[in-house]
Length: 196
Image (cartoon, rainbow, N blue to C red; front, side, top):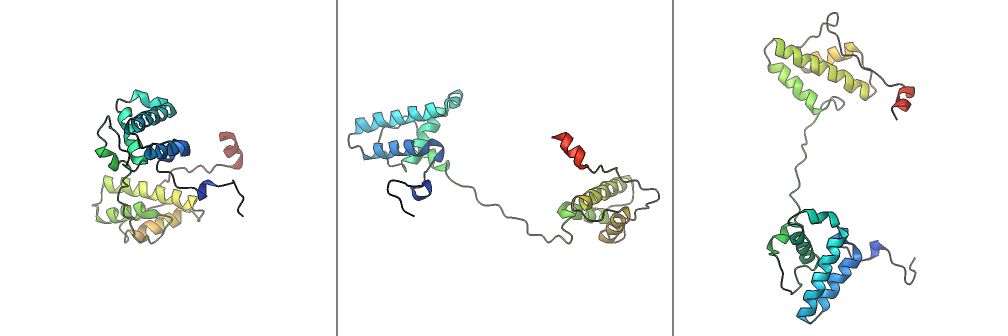
């Protein structure tokens, strides 16, 4: 559907710095079209003043003026021929995007436990028996039970003890007669409503 006089933002030219809006971009485009250097300079100063008025909270920053002039340079694609009151050579780094971070592509045997629990299993396999290993085993077992509950699996104590023994190659054996899990409170629908 094409209606004369009606255009959508998706059909318009993409804004370089959308926070300033289309009108400021039009002002910059107008400044680029001016042939008289003095008039171009006045126009650029007016644009920066307009930008400052749009973001009055920026006046608290000492380098806010520099930032606005840098943004003007970026919006004009560094083609605005004026006497810049600040050095705009660093402005090109403002729009540069960081390199994308690699996503760890490790296979997790059982996803509801997650990578950190499996790291705990590996640590428990190599630890010497003692207080530190017992503390890590207790933390791991309690987290396993919370994970099972969160993923709506059966979260019995036996399942946690069996999984802990299996994934630590039998190094950690929970004695369910003496081992006490932390109490997990399952919110009922009434409790959920009261919290809101």
